[in-house]
Image 1 (cartoon, rainbow, N blue to C red):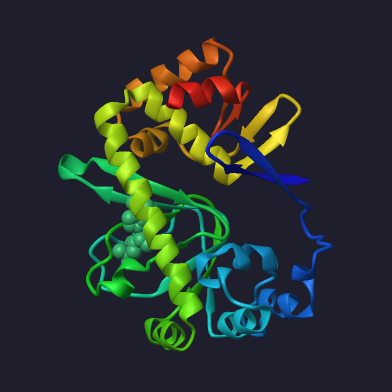
Image 2: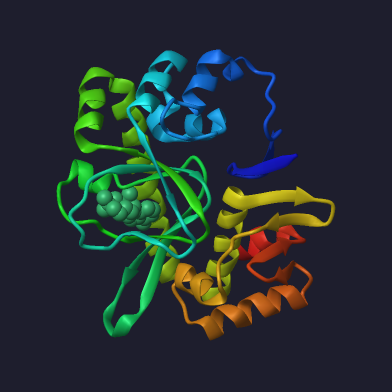
Length: 268
Ligand code: CMP
């Protein structure tokens, strides 16, 4: 059983998801069609696409029709999908794997804005505000993505306001998060930001195990530091301190949060 961790104001809710099985009405035939459109080659868990804001407010019939207009692409680990500054305006939904979104600063410094997993979308800024890509998108692991062309999406936006509402919801959530990141840069120290990032990664990629929440983030130490927005040395020091206190256990490209409460308190 895989479990996703959903952040609520005061607690962590474990949302159980049994891989490959589902007893809810969401797993009816039409959603099976949503998952396995002819020609896409996808053997997609229907629940993954339904999680994407694009689909969130659509009924099964409309979701299936929308999915049928989408393409599928696969990326190998480390492959760059697009670069910051590129002129390209497709929308992407992550079906499997992890994608990092980053920017380069002066002197070759990299900053990671987000690491996205299954059910998350990106590429909508160039759609709504025609202009170059605002980040570089790189596959952290092998990935499968669904793609939606600009003209196709525009048709859906005018014909189905629910699609526009879903996308606006994502934009609003992204603005909130961006504000939080700016505030954290000003008000939080590096260990506080490290704790917060660990919790965010757990929310997306965490699995409940007997000894804690296992977070297989697939990031190198350098990438973790880029996500926190601090030097690798400072971030490593904070991680080593958390490990010494027994709050986390460090493993290659993953971490187990042994004491969620303490990490949450450190993140505040
Ligand atoms: P676009 O600029 O078209 O291409 C890069 C995409 O990265 C962008 O659209 C957004 O979808 C996504 N993106 C940009 N900034 C952030 C951020 N701070 N957090 C998450 N995703 C982002």
